[in-house]
Length: 451
Image (cartoon, rainbow, N blue to C red; front, side):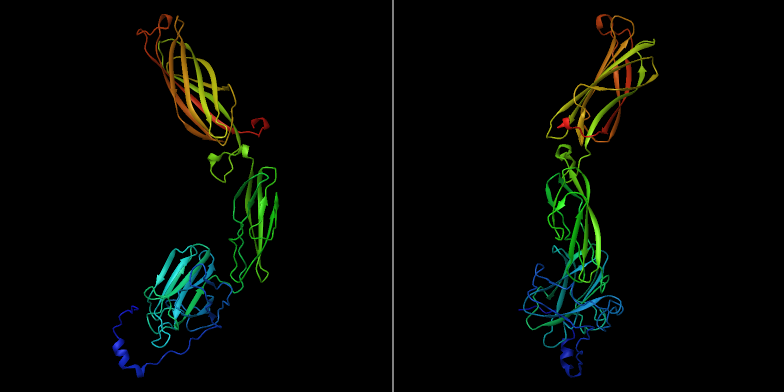
């Protein structure tokens, strides 16, 4: 049993039937587009991109306030029920405005249908729907508010689907008829195609991937494709998705795609192809993203500040440092230790510019990302007595440093006064020294021995 919506004036209408003037046949600007079955799902939707979109005048095509038949390209689809839902697909550009208007659905006679429109994206997400609307919307063609109407602005380019069904969630019954007026601005009567080369692509040297031009589209019909690349090779440059084989030389290359429509109009665009050497590629930088290449760790003593002295004299200070890094690429699993020492003369409130580079005990190159595990400092104050005053400190930043980055830090070391034979003493005050450090990671030319 079908559910019909209540209508307050049905009885009055029945008594006055002899005075009702039924609407004339729909005034179509061009031959209507016949419904083609099967079109009962999004997957089997009838595509109307290649139909005869026109700007011919029709009294039945408009928006909520005026006739738009001469300003917005449109088609008229003649639907016939067969106890299924009816789906129609179309392609739009970003920002396109669409009007979907049912005419001659509810006519109070044979073949009448109470329609319900639903608008979906290509993945089936519902964007808009309408059951009833004002008879004045969409210009002429409707004598009852049961005819549906949708206006929608498409934020993204792509393929969309409009569905017609009977209220409430019933298929369009056999024998029912309706006219679906579809108006889409931006639908040129002979618009050029739009090329989409996709990308950026990422591929290891001498390996293959598919390039993808299927995002290209044309409103009027099918496309032909022609690809070219600045390096590497293609199996068939006339395919929408050709196979690209990368060259042996890592680098950045360009894929150019030209599409041509049935009228001979063309559009050309490009996509970037990044060809990488797996040895200089860090998986930690993310899939499909080339690492920043091989980098070198440089570490510097910048400045020393004597905040507090253990005595009141000008003394000689010496500092020893050790830093430990970890290559964040799991394919190498290596550590690097940098060590250095420096010295200076200073008393309380003295600041000294050092500008001395640390030295490394082993490799100091890495790929993409390196992690700073810990830094240790040992400070000695030579006050001329048998035992140097001494202070130690260690921090574990566990900080990731990307190739090309610079990290600066200041480390503060308390200095304990020591007496004869290096034993603690309470005769002198505690000292305090702070050291400014800079770590830079500098891109370097790839070196074969790094393998």
